Image (tube, rainbow, N blue to C red):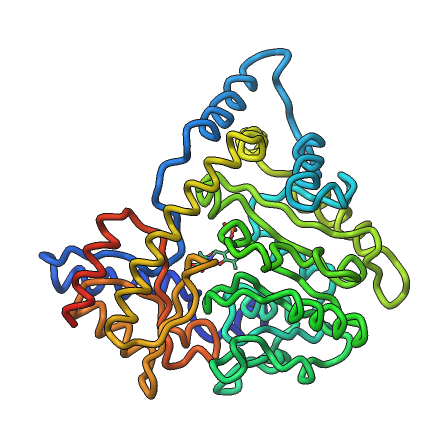
Length: 399
Ligand code: PGU
């Protein structure tokens, strides 16, 4: 028989969020009377707003007409790529530098095909699990050594360094995953920090994959919403982003990646050309209905709806943060990000997860699931109906 892919054998545990769902199911089975509230996985809960929803509906309607019908569109609708460049990057990119995807997670997985199994990967620790697990799946990271995977450089982001890594630890010629606003810590890197990141990447001949999936939650105008706000970033960074969280498209599936024409490998060859080759080979584009919704999300009415929706989730985040702070729990995030990163000094994060589930019937995400430096933290997600968030806060404050 064919042997199992050894990269899959190297994966230590199941993907974090299904594991949490499993523990929730087990708890529900043992306590059928419990009214469980999830502040665990960052999954949107509010209906898609009317103007954006009308865009989706109109996209579906047009497919049923001769004039409006469309089929494959490999790199995505030209109009959508141009609009993304205009709305998010002040027109700094040509349409052929913007690739429409079915979401940031899917692109994060595919992007590693550009660099293969020989690349050294560095991640913020803690980080969104897909960066590390995706690296293991492609063979860039190897076996589990008890605290982390061999081949991954973990850059601790802790209270001691204000959740920004020590860049002197960054190896040369590596792929750096960087997420801001950060999942899970909620920290948002400021301009000087991102400038240092870009300068270090250029000096160390490395490439950044910048995950900006939560950029629309930034309210402080001094905080950069994109890595391309930093001079030099076009030479060293790919950016992934998504309509999932700001427009409620977690189930619709629409995102994009920016691969600048200036970005080159050591050999001088174009990363953009290879990404085009990969996408046209193993990805046939995002749904054209989703893209019609994306266009509606980017006009002025859609932008207002995004602002309202992200304001709503930020309102939830404030409720959670205020509750935890009143309880004397030190926490980060929740002001320019939908995640609150709460510290339980000296505690095992899975144990805290279980305690909150048992005593409050509230699901969270244990910090250790995001990397070794996540131990003794728990992540609270602000995605939820307001009445559920209020009820969860009420139960927690009685703890
Ligand atoms: N990037 C970051 C940093 C994320 O936190 C998430 C979702 C994504 C990308 C996914 O974006 P899509 O465009 O929808 O693909 N993180 C959530 C959901 C869990 C998951 O497995 O994606 C979370 O709870 O962390």
